[in-house]
Amino acid sequence: MKRSFVLLSCALVLGGCSTIKSWWQPKEEVRGAPVAAKAAAPGLNIDGTPIEKVEFVAGVSSFSVEKMAKAAGCRSSEGAGRVSGKGPVEIYKLQCDDGKVY
Image 1 (spheres, rainbow, N blue to C red):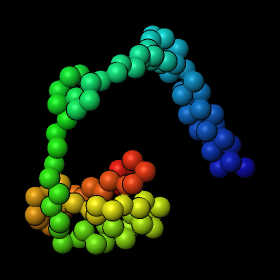
Image 2 (tube, rainbow, N blue to C red):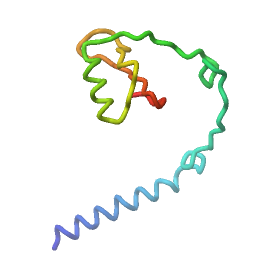
Image 3 (cartoon, rainbow, N blue to C red):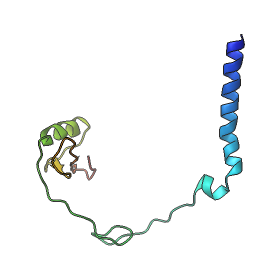
Image 4 (cartoon, rainbow, N blue to C red):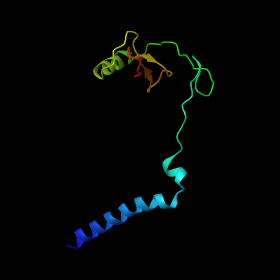
């Protein structure tokens, strides 16, 4: 009986703390200001910096990444390219035919 009372009390205190937190913060921080969408010029990010193009480099695990992407529903005619340097941890990118990136 005591154990369940203690657990219930802890749950109520922690739940109350999460609701009280919104009382201390200004409303702007809680809700956040809506962000207006800006159109970017082709080949540029929203802030005007050029989009970096990475050349395709096949890696040791390209085939494995392509199999994982296929299992996730991503079909691609290009294949998975390594975007990081060689090493024990490599990062790959695969452009799906429907426009998504895996």
